[in-house]
Image (cartoon, rainbow, N blue to C red; front, side, top):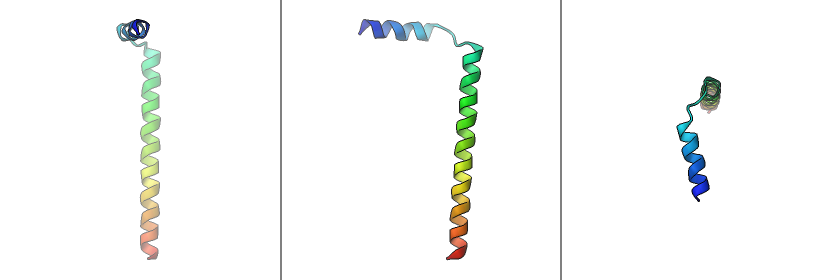
Length: 53
């Protein structure tokens, strides 16, 4: 267990590189875009189904 704690403390002490931060930002942007697109498509589908009924 001490090995896991030492890895966690080493990871917490090391600052993130700009490359790692940029990757995290791109992942967040992609996730946000995918979520917004899925929500939009679901809303459009519901509106189309509502107009038919």
